Amino acid sequence: MTGRLIGKVALVTGGTKGIGLSCAQRFVEEGAKVVITGRHVDLGEAALATINAPEALSFMQQDTSDDQEWPQIIKAVQDKVGKLDILVNNAGICFLKILSIQLQQNGVKYSRSTWMGFSLALNMP
Image (cartoon, rainbow, N blue to C red; front, side, top):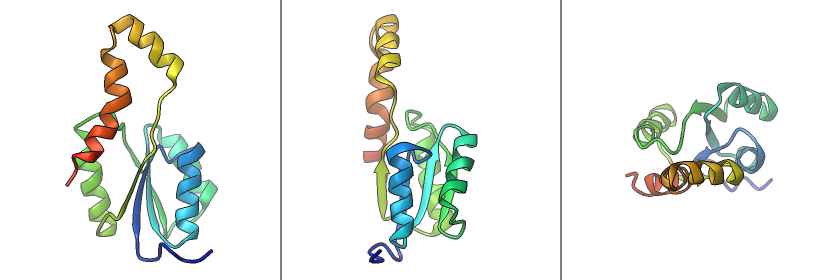
């Protein structure tokens, strides 16, 4: 690796598996300190074990659709590592589950789950 991210701090939402986990792993390989978030602590612990870089990687529990959690997560990252340079807003949801919720709740949950995390991330200082 080239060390392109040495001295950088990244927050990867949905970083416990899939694309988010791969992004976190690559960022660590490139020298970044990385905080991954997800809703499930057990998946967070498994992700930490998979990457196995305790000096560069940590996990914080977060539901990106909860607007009350965004300021807390940003502050926790800054308190833990000192700054935040990179945000990968990767957290996602299953479309089939959302479609059924949308049909049951007239679209309210669909809109919140799909767009809330993205819009809240954009409003952070």
